Image (tube, helix red, strand yellow):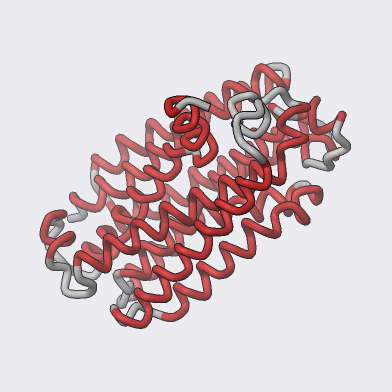
Length: 310
């Protein structure tokens, strides 16, 4: 395999855009805690002199999060290769035969171990809460256990979605929210991201409905049908709206946050309309893209909005 093809295979395996999103989520989450704890909303000061963790510790946290994200995505491809082939998901390197399955298993295991080591080092050297290491272990357990839980449908969706909120969790607790308002806001943001991620996982199942049904994979869409699965995804997106309103009315209270949140509402409104009116394969492909946009917009809303809290 030539170098260019080898590199592309690994970028596709890692879903490198999710790695970028994860690293930005760590920084955004840490900055949110920093401002909510009463500091001036100065991002450079937060990076270099936040008074809680040195910049080297913050960088290690970023690296650990990115590697954890890469490992979770890689191990998911390892487990899902047959289903991906059935669904003609040739954007996946294992499904199109660019990488060896045992190689992916070995490589993802190494990434898991490195991320655990880095988090353990943060706990021991930078005095980060030990709960963060336990949570990282839980994320590793989720990544590896996905193969055994994915056939349960909705529980499998929830299982995968926990991995999406891991970067936020790491970012929040690197900076140690120490006041009620910051702690409660962090929990609501985590819930918002969790509902959004779970809805997105259901949307992905709707897109993969035919292949999952042929592979006897008991996804939520296969179990109850694409339309009913779409109703549940839509309900989760409504919960995203409500969580955003709670944070907006009681904490953020500024036009910047509301402008971004309006965009998210429009994107998710389009998502709900599409999954309820179009065929599963076509509508699922569109809504998969829409919900990816909503992940980025929600991160921007919480990050940029916190700079203008009155």
